Image (tube, rainbow, N blue to C red; front, side, top):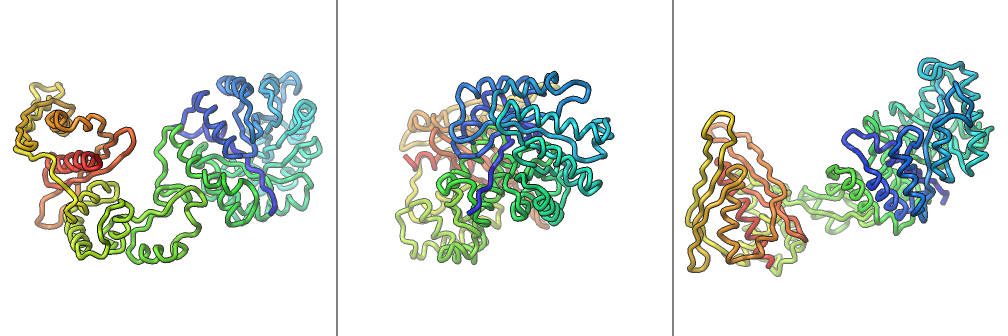
Length: 520
Ligand SMILES: [Zn+2]
């Protein structure tokens, strides 16, 4: 099993994602998470270009990573000063790391138009920078910026830039698809060509502008690259970098390369979610390997097949990457989905009972009305419990009234709800206001019930979604309301459908409260 080095640049390239802004504290947390996972190299930032990165390196030196090598990123020295006098080169050395990555221009067009120096001068910049840094730091990687575009435009010159870096002692020649537009076939061809020309190890750094970054990293490894750069969840400039969360399991499970251990691979989903959390981004549902939908089955034929043999519709066992199989509730599924759900909910009922057929029918009728239980599993669990007689009523609604009043233009309307409920033989009549009618109704209902069920104080409303359902001919428009609620330990979703938005919200609110009370 040959070894592939994994080089993570979430903290540098990844931090350039739109919508992502890491504080120094965030970066440190990600650093230690990546270290725990066993990533070989972690690029912490570009200290010469970003003062926040210099601060990060200061902190990172106090608690050095245990498994990983921390690296810093920078450019070849400025053409107008000597390498040892360049402030950004000084900043790189001040990071006090044992490995550096230096990027240099390899595309003649960029040398002339962006750097505005002669082709020869650029080769000197690469050679001098790598030589100087090698004297001070054990390992220097050379990032060959725009290498594939450069090689296609002027192969002879592009190869010369690699020669300059290799002869100066670069540890690895990392070929970058900086603009992310190269196709996998071209990557394979060019990496193989470099492999025959150089003894220095070859690496790959791919961007995802043509959605080929992961594939390009894989074909580069097949062509002989032994060092792969990327980011967690594919964060990065524009469309992002190669997603290590996909590259790592492919290298390990499909290409049989050694890159992380079997037990660390089981933490892959955990790592991916952690970085989403810190980035303050919603975790991508359909993300291969680690998304919630990655092993979710909806079609009835699929569900009965995977229950006998998971490999019928799963490319790997989800447990290998810390994910799990899910069966979705849907009108596409029949009895087998329902039986599977009964098991998931750990309900003490007989799966062969004719009541299961009743549930299938009920479910189809509800879905025709516009109900959908994906994302509202608590409502579905209640439906099963009601059919099997495992449900009890906690309160009875006598009536409610919701008022929205706007007194003059430009003023925010006031929403107020009054409600009367009966719990046992006690009547409770309360009123509450809120930000909008649904919030007022929710507040009033809880207020009426707290006295009897104080545990409802732990529940909060996390998310509220309304979807207008398209009406068929001759029918009125309905809305579907999805509510997500939670307490300290759990989250649950409930659903309501009606022509009236207040009624749809009421159904979802009642389900949410009943679900909490039934759990005890
Ligand atoms: Zn990049």
